[in-house]
Image (cartoon, rainbow, N blue to C red; front, side, top):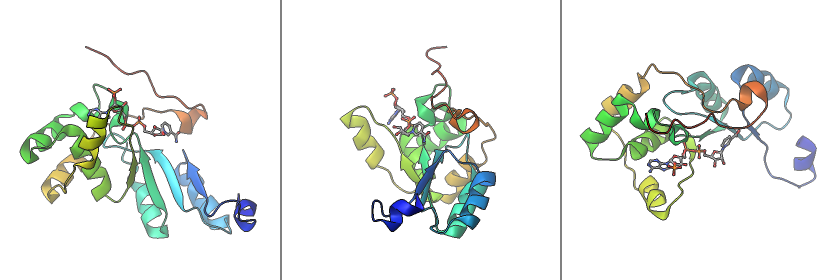
Length: 161
Ligand SMILES: NC(=O)c1ccc[n+]([C@@H]2O[C@H](COP(=O)([O-])OP(=O)(O)OC[C@H]3O[C@@H](n4cnc5c(N)ncnc54)[C@H](OP(=O)(O)O)[C@@H]3O)[C@@H](O)[C@H]2O)c1
């Protein structure tokens, strides 16, 4: 990948589905440091240590599945997220996106309709107490096992009850 940059085939190197214990040594040994890492991240998988490392090293942390892949139950239906959404008069999706951006991540979400895309852009900053409330969520759930298995694919959505 460094050779690709050397030859002008690409301008920067990005990594995906990487854990901190893999990224740290790779970062140290790389001649051309990674510009971005793309990993699953949402309140149920905050990846805080990885985010801190990325901030320290100037690497963009790109959160995929910031809405928890739309899983229900999942972050979109978490009581803390619902409570903040009601308080700030935004939708749970808008709250999750605002939380992700305010903690310093870029987001990779997949709205399926124009209305949802519009909703995703129409976000505004959450107050600190709301950010803290979401950051205190204790539930932990990885929805995409690609980091562990090398095989991409989300766990099946829970539909209905
Ligand atoms: N690096 C990797 O290994 C990896 C793995 C997986 C994905 N990705 C990337 O990450 C991207 C995002 O993943 P994702 O699609 O799971 O992200 P996500 O934004 O967490 O989940 C998207 C789902 O949330 C629902 N949704 C979207 N907007 C909503 C809203 N306003 N209110 C309620 N529900 C809403 C939609 O479900 P419905 O419309 O279906 O109801 C949509 O399918 C993918 O497109 C892919 O490019 C990367």
